[in-house]
Image 1: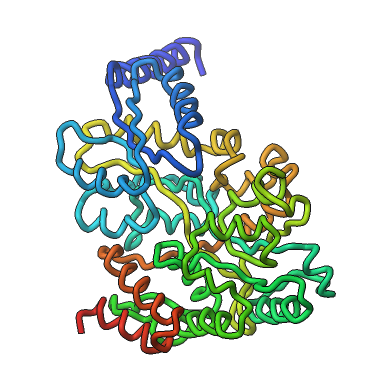
Image 2: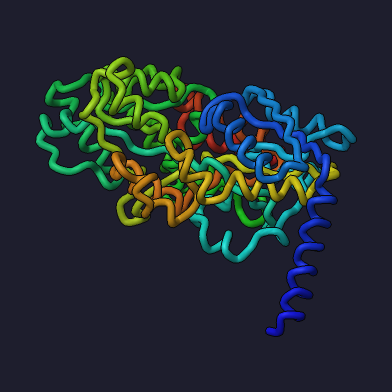
Length: 415
């Protein structure tokens, strides 16, 4: 390259960059986040401060609301000239937000490096009908936590690899009087119950909906999952108070040494294993990817991730996307991996991320490769409510599992 050509090229690049900064000058992005779980408010503010320091023409106004308000805040801002430019959304909402044109389709913005670099299961967080509506952020699933000392006392050499083995091990632990109820679950009539049910449904090879959108959970693996749940209550291996519990309740029961097994999100690992003020079983906790079912699957999971997307009404989509790409970058996610798991494959070979929690990270990597989604339907709220109500009836022994799921299916399909 000649000296003259080099100057010409660098001049073009300089002009392009100055044009981009001019276009972004005095841009204010309005961003909506959740005020609980995953990354703390302080961490998000810190990430954002680092971003705006690199982009002095951009200001980001941050708003934090409880999870219970997040969905409605996003919906109410639709079409507003003063609405949001970036929103945090739950994995159960993309179908609704896509069909109602709430979120912008960002399929064309997803690069090949993003597709190949991010763990495949996490993409179900932001996908509807093969289109992308954001970037996955803070991916999570539920894992099988177990008490190593209890298993050792029962003569059980290895943690269970199938749900059939979980039940068998629980029966042994109960028979030997090590703990009255070896299993504790989050089966209150709540979304927590649907997450547990999803894990079992995925293990037993079930599905929520057929290709035509009709309910499919009332037969096959969906039915086996509920039969498993009801069976564990009937035989006394599951704590009967599970029908009243959410995840924090199960964490406390397990951490008090009153259960051998439970399902929970990654946040429980540190609290149960490393925090004596929160746990009486520190140093005794094991964690595995949720098991599979004999002859059907090798593991099970549920997608508990969030996504970052751009509302369709945003007037600053390019700037908003640039901010999202920064927040979801491998470097940023690795730096803040203490409370939220990275979505990038390479992160799980990074000592900064893995050191001191190899056992947990091996389970996380396995689960995030699959991340079984809850029903991807526009009317998810009604779908979930129907399942919650009818599954609860079966768990309380008021109806059979088959009758409960058929009633839920009929309610959803309108029959």
